[in-house]
Length: 332
Image (tube, rainbow, N blue to C red; front, side, top):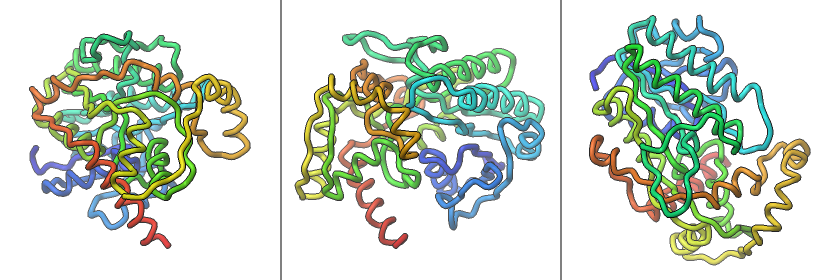
């Protein structure tokens, strides 16, 4: 990459703030677009240019893109709750369309879009998930998956229309700098704090947030226009993930396995729980489906073309725990 300004949308999120840190480490001039009134605690102290913008406001996008050569578009809404959510669709689909149009008008040299492994069609166990699996905007697994698939198809069309775009699809992201507290981050944190930790049988592919950020930068430098790259890590069971926390901390904690049938019954009350507590429940129909889905996911293309090499997951868990405790100490 050159020393030209790069714009990062969604910079306050987990992947976003780590990407900003990585870009600064390699000497990039970074501009971050944040929503009016949005907390920027995850970017505190970082030497970046802040601009106010909203993906649903095309005028603000063009102002944010002035003088920008590369864009990392991460802005979006993640939800694992059931049911339709018009705002999720608007932000993830219409917002991405607005950004693509603004990037084309402003002469952006390359746009790297962060999609999701969940935008791909679910395929049966026994087969490997790779970039040959199609994006499936009509899938039945939730508005988030649908919206990310729809947006990704728009990014591919933009590439065919002449805008240089690259797509990356991370799997389950864990690791340090998790300021907002992701679902799996909360599981790791509660176990590290020796709290009672319920879990269900199941497994998924988890990847270090720093490796995802490195993959995004590599995609901006070496990715083929219009191409998709899966950024996966290591497939492990939830039980083994908790055992890894025990190994890292050297301390025991109480955990118990919730039968999948009971977890699915409890998940029926997810919307009510969310409305009453304003907190994301541990078990939702979506999260349980993910843990039962095919999670044999290949990052061979990213390794071959981008030089992508994810670190061992035990390093991710260890660094996440150390960051949690250090962040809690500084915040006290």
